[in-house]
Amino acid sequence: MRHFFRHITERYLFRLLTSLVLAGVVVLTAISGNILWISLSSLLLLSSIYWQWKLYRMHTQKILFLLDAIENNDVSIHFSEQEDISDHRIVNQALNRIASILYNVKSETVQQEKYYELILDCISTGILVLNDTGAIYQKNNEALRLLGLDVLTHTSQLSRIDARLPELLNRCHSGDKLQTRLSNERGTMNLSIRVSEITIRQEHLCILALNDINNELDEKEIDSWIRLIRVLTHEIMNSVTPITSLSDTLLALLQECEGTDANSCSSSSDGIDTEELRNGLQTISSTGKGLLSFVENYRRFTRIPKPEPSLFYVKGFLNRMVELARHQYPYSRISFRLHIVPDDLILYADENLISQVLINLLKNAIQAIETEKISEGIITIRAHCNESEAVLIEVANNGPHIPSEIAEHIFIPFFTTKEGGSGIGLSISRQIMRLSGGSLSLRSGKETTFVLKFN
Image (cartoon, rainbow, N blue to C red; front, side, top):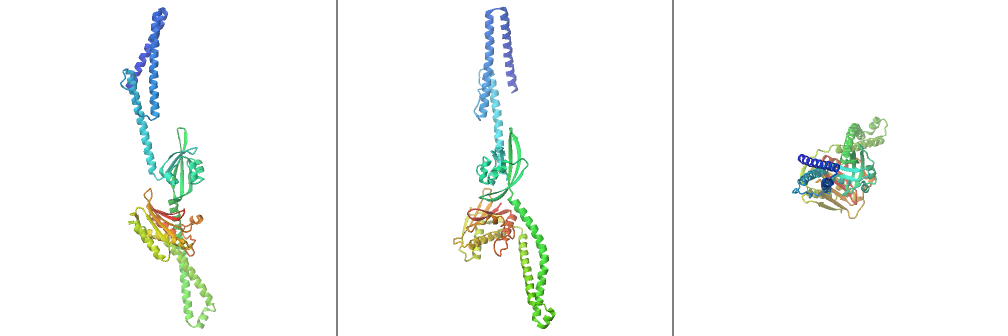
């Protein structure tokens, strides 16, 4: 390239000097008054100027043509390097070299963009890049998956998910940490949004990082419950155990007194109404035993054994769960439907613990259908892999829908709407799934569906 500039510079300097010499000759001939030499020198000067102007325009047109071709991604542009005139040949060689360099730079830029896009699509955080008008410049697959959309070009499209979401994103600023709750066909999720800003080519852009924090919130909630429960069990056990023991002892003494002479019993009791005493002691005893049973349920929730996972076939496992449910409810007319894809789907988990989850979900489904006395009760169990190769087991029934105000609390320990229910079945089930590295969630829709997800 240096050789090119040196050669071109020398040629232009030579032409410039030639023009200056011709201009001097014109001046001298004009002084001498020789019309012939004046005409001849003037013609040579004009020819030199015209030739330089023609070269300038030719080279300028070639450069403009090259820039247009690069802008339009025309890779076929090529200037002939076999020109008879050396100046043209050298210029064409230089332009071809410049075109090659620019195309290589542009190709590398495109490859880098694809490389970064692949990296964005591999991360578990959703990324959205938008300008001040809400136009989406960049997004990755995880962002589309979290939002439940296939196409996203403007924040206004998010109103289909939540009417407040477009306004929330358009008003965010750098450093904001937002949290919102979204509901779609996959269920309800808590979405965390972190905001950054950047200015590129004098245009202000917002970069949003989206994360589903359902599991984090579930773990924090369950850990808080466990800590509270352990404190409660300690205090209640310390208080209730001696009360129960004392009441049982008094009842035994009263029974012995009744078995002896009535006169001695009445004298020893100093006129105490034995019937009233009996009722009071029985009340204390039954209350204490009820509290002990309550505490035992707490213990069950906080003493789930550590999972010991192994590989097993989902189809055989679900068939056994269905047969067990039929055995427990032999008079039920509920139909069970199994859909397993593929047929040899394998799961890596603790089969014994997961069976407790399935038994509890099937029992709840059967009770829900029978409570409403639905004539054609159907429980559908589906097992498959999603796009991220996580195994999903869905337990759906056509029983009554769970109201939204109740659905928010069904996984809280000891929350129940059943008369005589303990309220720990779903809590224990979610805890088992969390310990197994998965999750348990309720999905709203035409059917009441509980989804077990094994990551």
